[in-house]
Length: 252
Image (cartoon, rainbow, N blue to C red; front, side, top):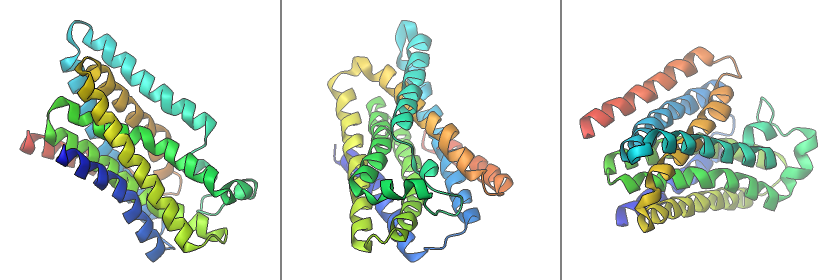
């Protein structure tokens, strides 16, 4: 339990670390952001398949494939519905990280912005927590590490837009802290859910995998290919994916 709690703090804390980098490097180039985000996408892709989808099939029993496929699509559909209700960060900002005029008032409503980020962070936190349900600590830490890596560049990008609206640095930091806390809560929720009932573990693993695969395909890859760095981003994604394969073999 101690390891789960520390992991939850690490996953949530990554958003805060990213925010601190955002204060320091306010003019981060798109190329740098794309490379880092693509690497995180590769890590998450390997983590979701190796640590969530494959164990779901292995633990699913007689109807393993049905349970896993249903779980993956339900997870993706859940994030899709959330995305329709509350557009995610890359749809609220322009190419250079500036706020679209029609979104200015929306961003100034701090509460709405916090809710938008929190809603999208919650499923990621749950995915990190569910990973511990398999009993394979190495896989669980790999999943959490991939999500944490993704949170760092995301934490960096949310700072600039908020500061550009005239928001005080102290308030922007509090918002980043809240988004991190939400992810900590999600991680603990995911862990306790599968701990209470192991029967839901195969579906929960596949569901978490589906949420991660959706985020990778719908948000991370398009974002890293939108600014002319697609080739570097592609190789960075492959590097992240292969690194997780190495970890899985060495730690497995």
